[in-house]
Length: 160
Image 1: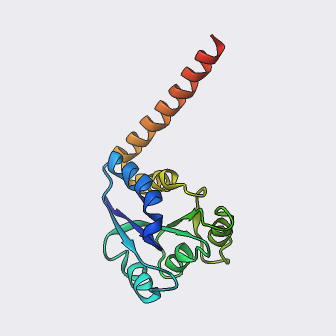
Image 2 (image 1 turned 90 degrees about the vertical axis):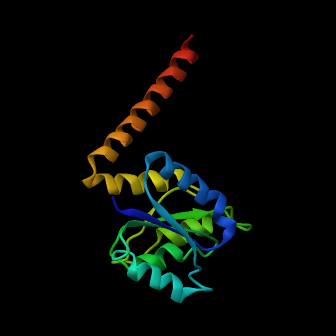
């Protein structure tokens, strides 16, 4: 199975990254994490993205707050799927990062999850990898089924 590359712009994004890595661990998906800034270390971020396919990555996740150009910078330098996680920042509660991540120009797609959506980014990466991995697809089917059972149990409890 291909691995997932997770790049955060700062170590302040680590709590969000840990939500993603926990989910990837639970699914048995190999990943690498790095800190490369779109603004402070653009050469390293570019090199990582340019070489991601030959380094056996199948999906990249860019995690950043505020200006949040990291996912777009990765996507500009690879044809692999890129998922952006906008993070809450000190000024606009993550809205700035959300807009920076989701408003990509035509030809440079970035799939964007919710603000601080580490778990969903990991699940989306897993769904992309599961296109060609039936074992992983079965694990994801089980998660969906368990989620549905949990909601129905809460509904039943509420009704009683």
